[in-house]
Length: 311
Image (tube, rainbow, N blue to C red; front, side, top):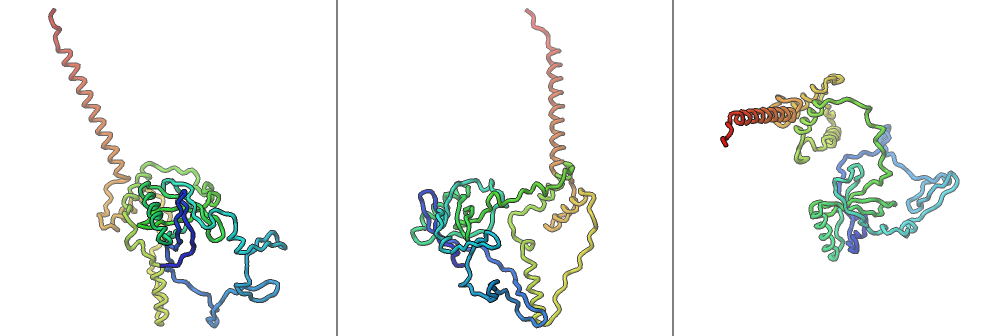
């Protein structure tokens, strides 16, 4: 289990849950160092004082805020720790909301919260079960790594997960990036819906969700270590150029998706099954209207054939 990166408590109304914050993810990427190609000597970054022109150690380095080029204000770690913030040593829950109401772009790195000590067990489980039954997530405020953050608490298995979140003013407005007005037909939309249907999965398991880049990089390193030529990438087919017929591209994409699932790649219906269902509904309405018309005629004929009763 990784070491705790933060100790504190989750504040849940008047309930306090001592917790330890643990990293929830691992990085398995292959990393490189920088080397001087002429002699393969390691290139390192050194911290040098601009005034004394000498390298300084970590114990001589501190934080400061630069007012301007000639004025800086030193800030010590003790001063940062002593700031009058209620979230300095606590994750303070401020609201509960439906998970679907949160824009995923705001959700960041995830951390596991571990109950810290026997006393924390019961309130920890209480909060976890309450979140499960309510089908909601908790929004909290906390201070970590030199700043106050917004957080999201949710349940994963038997653990509570804390996600760092972006503040509103940290999310850029995407309006300027949106394409200009473009006409898209109903058939094209329904064709895209069919493609989405064919590519829908129940989970993220399978060869498509494996880090092939890291595997390929490991093969390159292995080959060079053994004095062999690194494996070459397979030759890619030349791009066919700009796709003008969008419906053709959708049809071919649906066929490709079906083939990848081992299904018959023949596309019998385009743009979608929805079109067929619309036609079926129209036919059903037409039959219903015709039947109603026939019934009305029969009723009128019966009334006309009836003789008036004698007094």
